[in-house]
Amino acid sequence: MLIYIAGAGAMGCRFGYQLLKNGQDVILLDNWDAHIAAIQSRGLEITGDKTDTVHIPIMHPTEATQKADLIILFTKAMQLPTMLQEIKQIIGPRTKVLCLLNGLGHEDVIRQYVPLKDILMGVTIWTAGLEGPGKAILAGTGTINLQSIDPNGKGDAEQIVTILNGAGLNAIYDDDVLPNIWRKACVNGTMNPTCALLECNIGQFFATDEAPIMVKNIIHEFVMVGEAKGIALDEDEITKYVMDTSVKAAHHYPSMYQDLVQNHRPTEINYINGAVARMGKQLNIATPYCQMITDLVLAKQQILGIK
Image (cartoon, rainbow, N blue to C red; front, side, top):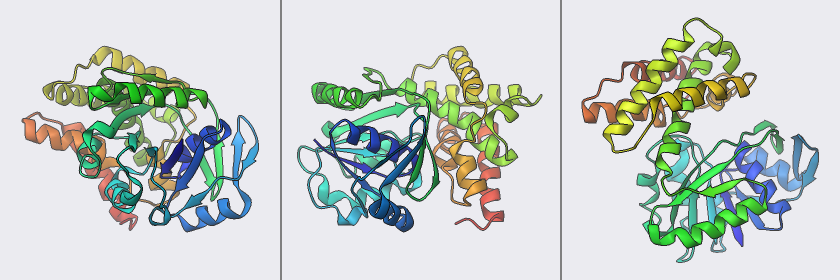
């Protein structure tokens, strides 16, 4: 199977590495020139739970020509429309597209480029990091939940689940994946912007006296908006999941911290808390915490000169 990883950041490198090691034909796609040059010259260097170096094809998205069997989307949310435009030449009549991006509402963008019958939506709790161009840090374990938007595509999606599991990625077919996507969004919505704004790791934020009320109110806003959109969400279960995750990932600096504080890059705030705030306005549901957090992150981006 020819698998393209569209977005070869930390998570893209993890998935590409594990699929390649399991014998799949994998090509990484990215627009980071230094990253591409490093992998092309010395291979993808892996540290963390293991040390390894693999030679894996990588190129700019517009350079890809062969029709894909599977495309796994791992761009930043704001880069998704550009990536889909740049890879439209490799989307064929049999191409399946699996979206594992953080945030909400990506299916509305993808369906402009891909037939609904070929779109798979999913969520993963795998983590990864980059310590520089061509250098990925892979540690810990995770899972994937995915679902075909078209119920008739379940059989093809289950074949993809089998391929992912062959690579040790712990995937399952989920007949109702949206609650899991929203639960993951709650994790990101409570941890990513707060740690980025306070410039701390997850454990440091959750150890503050203010964290419990902030987390509670953010989750409540997500749940109110999600339920208004017809998504069944259990607020107590999500809160427990977020708290459990905060313990397991206490020493982790979330991706929004990495983007904003470490690398001075735009964040995905508009697709997480910002998305809930926008939906809340449309549904006449108050979301003051999500709106304020979104405004603060956007203000910090402007102060840092991030465009």
